[in-house]
Image (cartoon, each protein chain N blue to C red):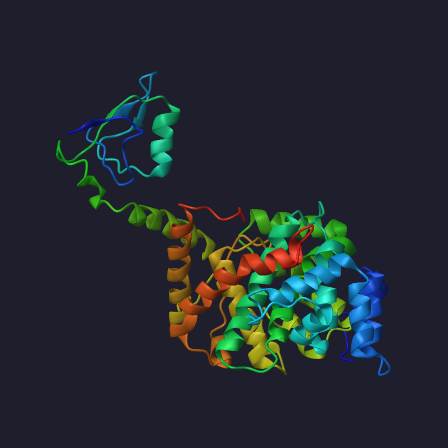
Length: 287
Length: 115
């Protein structure tokens, strides 16, 4: 376990508890005695979660050539390694809702995050990386610190948001001057508490300043670049009024070809609504 | 100098005469290039007709002023504001900015959910 950067965040009990179903899936995935069928049975026990798993497996995110009709098949497509992260990520838009302290509409906030996740993953796919899902999760979670700051430090959160809207300043700078740490650090601490893989925690912690990352430099850079592209395209709403600063070093680490940017954006716009539907619709019907 | 109702003018048309509202207040001076917002203002103030520059029989030739270029200009301004804190002029920043302007101009005809 890596250490938390700021002692204020060490009281992990401050972070919202995860739904019992997510914890049950986590236990089953972690247990060497659990079979594939055991995990499928837990997912199936919740109709809403099951239909979202099916919808995700059938979405253009996986582009699977045949229709997936059962949870075991959906788990095969999504992969057991990602099952826990998917169930947790599906629950977060319901756990972290809009508050007066961070008044960005829930759907728009998560639309921004989903777009960043998709964009980072598309760049990774285009580069033929392995395990591209981690880029999606890192993008999906990269700004999770913002609603968490609203929960943990409501007084400061109001001021941070007000300053971000009134002054020419990015949210993370306003957060840093009010709290001594920024939202990326809070997000990373929460993900560590919720036992996300270390690589995803690092991608979230350093996405604003990729050069500070000691590990996973390329992955961190992809999230940084994806956040830049999505903010420029104004997809969803992050709480920032301005496009973030662009790290030229991150572009260097990404080793990506500039001529492919238009293709990535076209594919991102093609996928965005269907993936947002899986994560954000109050109720969904699977195919 | 064809006389047109605000419902007939197009983004890109240029006003040939000053346009006033019913209170005789100047809305737009001659030479103003119309965009969707300005056309909306003409309708909002109940202006019945305006003179626009161009050939009298050239209703078909007016679209030479490409509406997508106008949308692109509006998008440019919007993106310029959003990029205010970006210091880098790296070619990727320029490329992403151009893509953002293009997408914003495209979506101004079919707005995406407000963000």
